[in-house]
Amino acid sequence: MIILLTVAIAPSLALFSYFYLRDQFAAEPSKLLFQSFIYGAVLTFPIMFIQYVFEFEGVFEQVFNQKVLFPSVLEEFFKWLVLIIAVYRHVDFEDPYDGILYGASVSLGFATVENVLYLMEFGLETAFIRAFLPVSSHALFGVVMGYYLGRAKFTKGTNGPIWLAFAFVSSMSLHLIYNSILYINTNLSYGVIPFMLFLWWFALRKVKQGHQLSLTHYHNNSSLHP
Image (cartoon, rainbow, N blue to C red; front, side, top):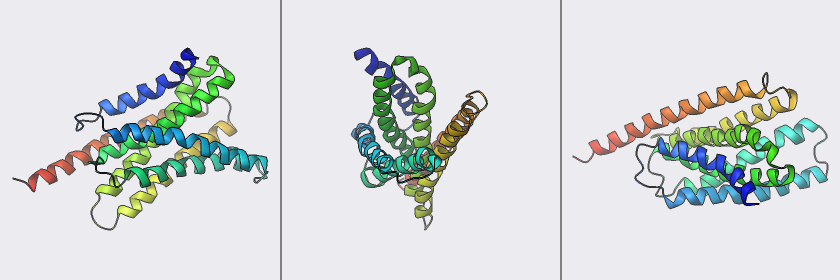
């Protein structure tokens, strides 16, 4: 059991450490980062319950809607909702790049519990492929969501709500594409692997843009206090 938990949790810790160490502005991890991870972990159970109820009741007639569309919308909506309620107005949300960290933290909390439950059922043989696909994809969805969350919070004027909505739409769309590819094409080399390479490129681009936004944010604030 200890080995299983270690293998299940290790990818999430590695991914989070990677994104955290790229933060040029944080002196130390905030308590809110840990709380965000816990929020994401707890989210796993109501999401799984809702999915089970909908499947048991036969709400969706088409398999695509049940296996692809509904999980994509449901999971990203709940992660987005947690970020809005628990993180968006928090005092520790200090610069745009923080949005990336909190988005990744919530997503990795969810992915970690999901990974533990999956490995408990199917064994360690699937650990590597799950680290590469579901765990890392959730982290990258969270990075994209968090980037736009940061833009929403620190954008002056009336565009904040638009970026806030885009935080959900962008991550949900990426999740939907990911699930659709897995549903349509079981050949990883011609299906999801090319998309994962694109997703890494896209998310790392948002990381770079998040850094630039934070630099601008701190420069503007420092210029107000000579």
